[in-house]
Amino acid sequence: MVKYKRILLKLSGEALASSNNTIDPSTLNKVVGIIKSVLDQGVELGIVVGGGNIFRGAALAEAGMNRVTGDHMGMLATVMNALAISDACRKNDVDVLVMSGFPIGGGVCEPMDHNKAKEALSAGKVVIFSAGTGAPCFTTDTGATLRAIEIGAEAVFKATKVDGVYTADPVKDSSATRYDTLSFDEAISKNLQIMDTSAFAMCREHNLEICVFSMLEDSNTLSNILKGEMLGTIVRN
Image (cartoon, rainbow, N blue to C red; front, side, top):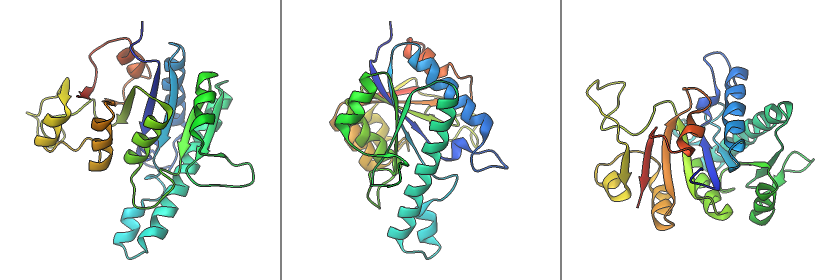
């Protein structure tokens, strides 16, 4: 029996890319495998995707672009990634709904509506949330936390390129060790960069667990965590 009924999966844009492509088809297939493994357990799934493989608003602002303009471009990049994931899902018979934090016409995707999102999730659809919070100057980490709260998710699962939270950067420090669990207070005192400050504070306030795991492993990693295996790092009150 799985622990959660409804979860929010946070995917970075960079995780979707290969060295040659901004959106890697093989990675999309891996994401679909992760999605199907979750649905097979009867768990309802919302997804927030970043856009860093196409545009990063903060980086554009550092280069001299207006911050708001850069963030709008970054949010549009998340819509492109969401559409790519939804297309891959539909090709694999996964029912999916894409929502955007700001209105986009032409039947591209639905505007964000937490009631419609919850109805879709209850009906077995995967709901992909794009365009972050719909406002500039907020990260997709904050967007993921906000959407998780709106849909009543019980945990946020953050897919990264490492298999959890470490005492130091495991790439740079071979002696770094992985935490199995952490409290929010421990993570703050140790200055562990799990999410940005506002997203982290929202999770703590709403008693929303965070699980950091690697999406580079097999597509059953998240499914195995849901079954109770000690993979990744759990952060909770």
